[in-house]
Length: 120
Image (cartoon, rainbow, N blue to C red; front, side, top):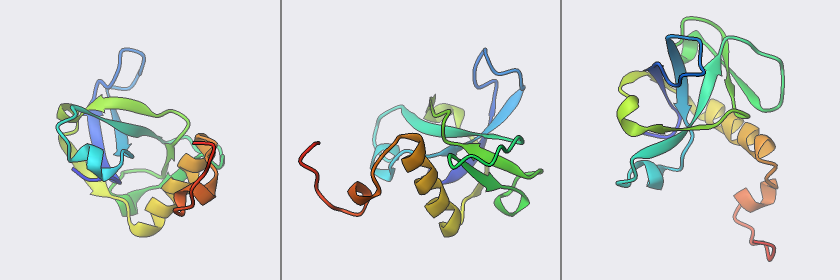
């Protein structure tokens, strides 16, 4: 399992009306590779509102329809639920995902470029 991979998950939660939902793994690789049993994922919806926290994806990433990764709706999923592999985001989409996550979590970009902050 790697960051940026897409998986179809059956019955992800009782609140989700869909039988299956696609998620992209957004956790850092060191967590994914650890014995920790869950990873952070972002859901993929066919709806696209054009928000800075959404990343457009589609058939090029293995999906049936044009869709969007919604970084405002992060969830923790058990690794054991992520078995139906769909595809992997290309580097340009990973960069867009990183930017959408920075916006969704209100993170300053300089912290991601290796600069230290005395506030943290």
